[in-house]
Length: 323
Ligand code: BYC
Image (cartoon, rainbow, N blue to C red; front, side, top):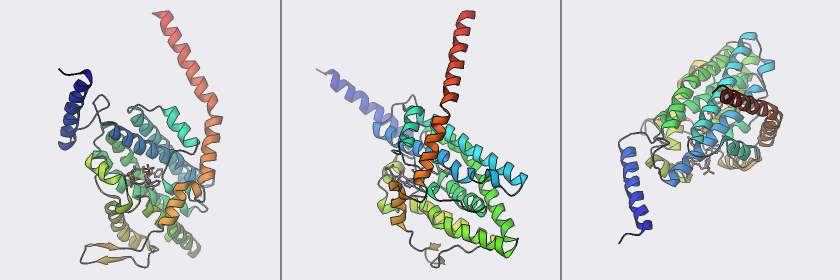
């Protein structure tokens, strides 16, 4: 005789087989589908961290909106920062389909319990930082995120398609800021080079720890959430930067960087992984400031959330009265 527990095991086995088959055949897993608990958890982890990165990522650039050097630059920068807010919202929505609420994710962020990209814990002291962020940070984001458009989880992959389109505009605007500075005065060229010197290594670290120290990669690749390893994407990024740096006339600050004919890839110097882990532990130059700013904005925005909820309540009441 089969007990109820045995039956649920049989069901789970069938569901697991169906899930495996969908993933193997490049089909999408949708919110209504059964999925292993570990797959759900991994997605919530990655998508919520990604959403937080977009939201915190508004701060380093937001710093320059009121000080942009021209009306045109200000309008472009404002549009870009608004795009980041939009990316955060698509991603929070995708994460919500997995059974976590936006309130919970926000609370985790402002309590300092959630991770977000290490890159946004560095300061933006000059206008050239807007160029370096666009060229390097958004450039890294594109290389990392284009493969995520094919992530096995439907809502995540679809959100990434829209995000990647906007990221390419972001990357170009950064490149163009640097290009203009590099065609300017000696002082402007120095400012551009200095910004690239400061953002280059942290942008390489954005791809995550080396493959042999990346605990999540193997499983995420089996599930087809990630399609390439951290090191493979980092390598692709450097290959993309070298010819662009030549056009800009900017030097990438790695004396060990050279093309290796045998491997067909660039050899590069060692990333400062101690610095990376320190930033992840909350000890980067701007971690505390970023979280504090987010917490304040959340608290100061409470009246907007309350007003929206009250408006929705009144609308629902009115609809009921009419019916
Ligand atoms: N910063 O096993 P691993 C943007 C963590 S948004 C902080 O390799 P995984 C943009 C990792 O979470 C940029 N933490 O992990 C926005 C894990 O910790 P937990 C964000 C990092 O998930 C505005 C541990 O280290 N992009 O571009 O397989 C303006 C071990 O790592 C970082 C995304 O989120 C880091 N850099 O791979 C402009 C893309 N790297 O969770 C631009 C989506 C690693 O086990 N995410 N960690 O405690 C991904 O592709 C992957 O999550 C990662 C890491 C490649 C980042």
